[in-house]
Image (cartoon, rainbow, N blue to C red; front, side, top):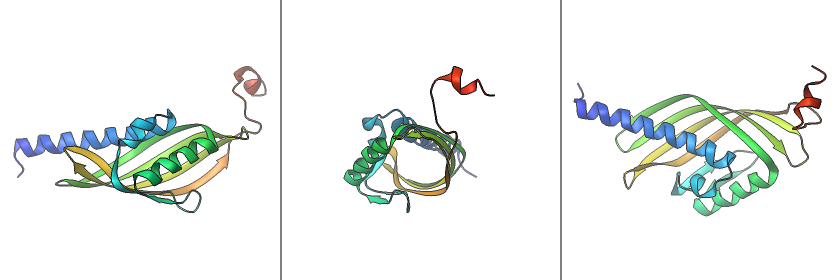
Length: 156
């Protein structure tokens, strides 16, 4: 049986990892480079797959971040169904994500993905060492997309 201190530490670790997952979303969506880059280990692997490629190391991750921002004028990530497995100073997480975005052509897109994460406590803080994204689909939502709510909902 774990001690109360061990149980509290596990709760704190889980909460910090959940916050790290949220920082990923806020960083990429809010175009906050400092926040987004703060969540990765120096040797992290950001594996986005065939659509956007695999990026290893902090410099490559920063480069693809700018590539994503160049491809999408806006993105909105919602992470859910977070499952975390702790093992001392390492952890694994599985996260489902619904993402909406608008590309540079003005098309609204909807994505569904699963993130398989590996994390490590570095200097007392949890960081992603691997984020492996399984993109289930990426599909247009409405053509043409408009932020003008009055005209967009007039046909509904």
